[in-house]
Image (cartoon, rainbow, N blue to C red; front, side):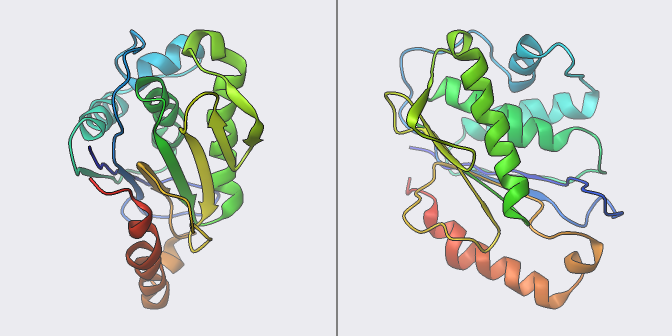
Length: 212
């Protein structure tokens, strides 16, 4: 039984400093299944599926820390970096794909300041299994396959996305990623938004993480 999180900044057309808005990822690992792909790290998997994916020393460090967090009971990981470095693509796209190949029963939740941003990452992760299911070893269920909520066939694992403050009721989570909980510099430095975001984490999101 395990629980794990992580954090990242991402830029969506708003100028901001590197410490303004991190991504938070929280996880509890489920039972390890016998089948495990040979690819050991998320970026290795990303480059195997998409040769356009680039590497850098900072992404290699994040790559390693994500795996450490995933395999460490009750871990938390915060990632705070300047925008446009590829951290959200790694943490919110490729890491969930990799996590589901390692433990297909993992129930992943991803939230962002806007529901459509979170939904975009949900679609990207889902489409990797739609397009490369033969390589990844799993297919998406045809009856639960929307961009913001989908499951892998034959498992309870999959992904659910929402905006920060959106409903997470009845959505238990083994791996939780919060990517940009606020929109930009002004909100990040607003005591009102800080309190609102903290309340969403302590009052809603944290209670969704499965025990263990």
